[in-house]
Length: 369
Image (cartoon, rainbow, N blue to C red; front, side, top):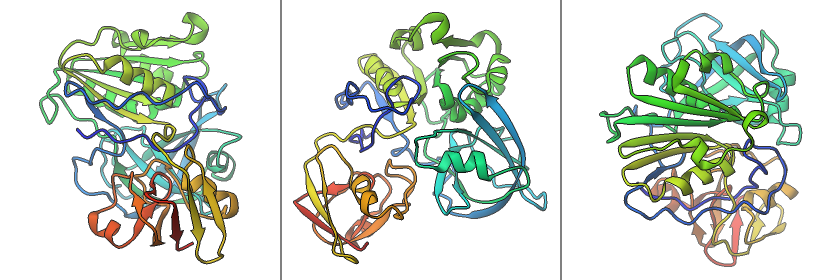
């Protein structure tokens, strides 16, 4: 597996994604040991095939509060005419087109065996980019929405079917349960040897707790108010050789897990993050917006997207991690340091760039914006 360089973003301050800057969090060193196979949501292809860009018109038929203290709701989506929906595999997500025009991505957290409905869950983030607030406030039952996908950049690979592992251990933090829950359901249904640790601040703050606890003793629920902040050892109770670890949560959690397993022989790590980690090995550069002539300076630890948004808040973006293509722009001048994992060689040769993660290999880029 290829280890990707971390990509730009401000990480959450604590283990469960609270929206505050945290200078203490720094990306761990590149995982170079051959004994660890490391995947992030940008370097695994959907084993079912190519990325699906289909657009589906769906309707919200149910809204449920899933965690009161963190204001998590789930939405059940169906086709208005009741037809079957495209199939999906655990780890998949939908691109949700919001009424404002924003595009946001949410993991499918229902049952892949249900061909007539999709379920997503959204945690309200008051000081975020506005997408979660719009879901909570502008999508009541009966709303019509357009989605793209399903897509899968965090696939669950069954032992013996593309994975050398003999058993699976799942780790989820808070809303990070959403892609993990269908994986757990599939592992349980197919008789896979699996275990799980589900962490959160308190039992009132973690969504889908009743569904997770229905799996019995294979699951350990570990909350801060009962046990204190977990260590990596608490989240990884003795993973032995031939173990595949699937982890979803904020940067501190995924970083701690990766650092803990990097020296363990025979352990696979598959991880999806809430947000991208900070820039590593960045250098400052300038971006000129060709349509207005504006020039923005991009600091060594910031992304081009972050700085462009300060003067052009209408620029489209979504994942900020280099896989959804929403922020793709054409480069008119300058050399790009491509840090995504989705653009084809032809697209790069044609001057395309994802400004959420890629940078300038020199001092200046001119973008068709």
